[in-house]
Length: 173
Image 1: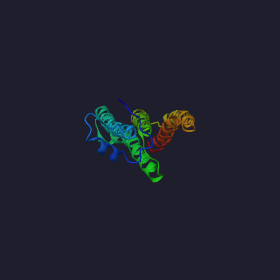
Image 2: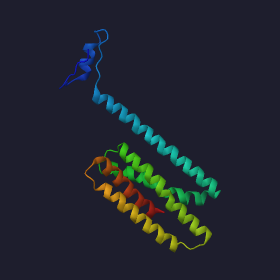
Image 3: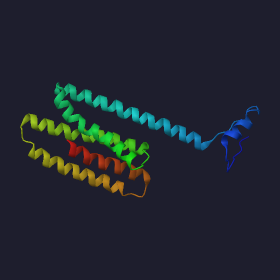
Image 4: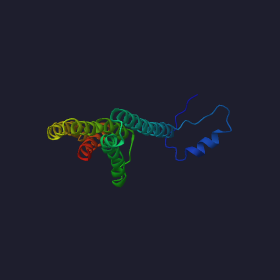
């Protein structure tokens, strides 16, 4: 038998009452979703860290020196930390959608550093690369800006995080 309960003020008290009944169990949907969501958020954070380490390793293998590796990698890594700090400062609860945006920022933001490092190493001419990167950055910001202006919380969270993150990645690179 399945019974739905509405307006339960103290789910713990109901669960304690049901312990004496064989086979009776309380399923607290809000608690279940909160726990699943929390686990998913932690896993996304772990994926972000592992992804950052893999990207750093690839850059280190490419450049074979720490200085160009850090020059290419640090801007996007710092932006991820900065975005989380700004969210905390403004009282924004970082959720899974923001974490998805951070993963996008790490992936796209490191490109700016790579292009600038490679451009300065191969030709010494960064001007053309900077103009191309600026145009690329602006189009990306505009696209994510449209998402950020959405009334749908999913699109808005991803758009805001990725749009601001890409802009900061470009500026720091």
